[in-house]
Length: 191
Image (cartoon, rainbow, N blue to C red; front, side):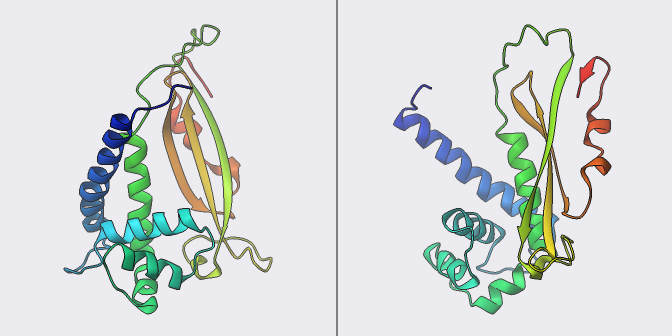
């Protein structure tokens, strides 16, 4: 694997910052997350959640409040908790969706064996157990500790070397009900 230069990292960092500022602002309004002018913008909320949970996947509200403070926005645990709602989930979902489209790989993967297909989609899923407080949004199972779960269905366009679809839903929903394969199917494609 070729190492990237400092300039390439700087350029990628600037692209991500621009993406977060412009797309998060737009998606904040579209998702209903932004209802009034506040220091806790859609961008700061997304950065708080993403950076906080990347640093510590088990982060508490207090941990996330501290991340927000480091980003320049003081907020109470109750204030942040109030923003982790349906609109907050929709904002993060739309950011992820937009990032998949904007940062898709640009080069094709040479695969002579599969060249007879118009496209080759690899579909898979995973599941993440969530805190019980998210049960109204992502229903899990009846077992203690699994009441809330997120099912992630993902499709990768193998010939183009990029992600081409993502679906988030309740963890309880079986994989067989996912319709990504049907929606992505085209003449000459392989799923």
